[in-house]
Length: 186
Length: 228
Image (cartoon, rainbow over the protein chains, first blue to last red):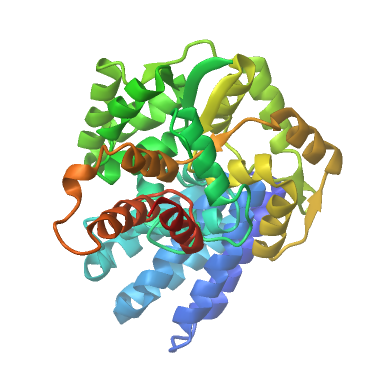
């Protein structure tokens, strides 16, 4: 893992631990804020480890309120193990901890299952939509999040992600161009 | 000019999901030229969704359009031009000293092929690349507003990209649908009631918007006003 990536992932893991180490009602919103911070790093670094931690943070945000105490403590323990692995630059331990974190979230996923998607799939689509709203193209956003354009386009078009005030050619002009191409008098 | 339209993946996805892809062979006949997709677009429209349970049948619908020669795979993609344009586009904006990749190579294939072959137009629902070509200041505004971190701009690249892509007409799936309506392809769907044409037009234009055509509500209204 590159040093700058390690630094960003470590920041996210430390912040995540700070948020959840004492369980309270604000965990939920703070995790959402942290996952929104992390998504900009996805666009900047285009790195698999950044994407993984971003997807994890969003997944945790989705399930955190449904975790029982044992599951909650497991997540904290695994996050601390992840932090240690990063601080010691131990990539093998880091990968094992991250994998275990995803399993812990996945296990508690039954209550948050959306349209037969796992919470991780849903997180990829949601975060891909955020990248779209920030101005990345559909292909770029889908590619970064490991999605097909079909997945992202069908979801994002039902949100405000593609809404924008910035205009190119006026719609009536574009329609005239199209009609002319097809030999129809505008 | 080559009588051809180059389709990006987005408009085909919009039309298939909106159950309106059947207008494409009729439009092609009226157009009298080719409807091309590049190999990268083919991959995104057919090969990729064949791996996704939810979109397998949609992939087969596109495959049928290729079998019927409604869509033709364009093999002469000018790779050098693609590389040059993608390099310009993805080295124009940067954050924290790192260039921001905003366009994917596959998306650039349709544009580069259309430019090199002097095609009639590119059909593209994708907002980012369209804005980049048509209104570079708006593109800058979009990114600058949506990222929390400060965006730096390489103006030389921005201007070079804009000048090289200037003049290529870009149309969207929503305009194809509006054209199909104008040509009477949708007339069997007009409901037998007062304001029937408006109901039909509303239904198909909003279907396009909610299935992927990057179009604003005011643009939908503008198109409706023009056609009714």
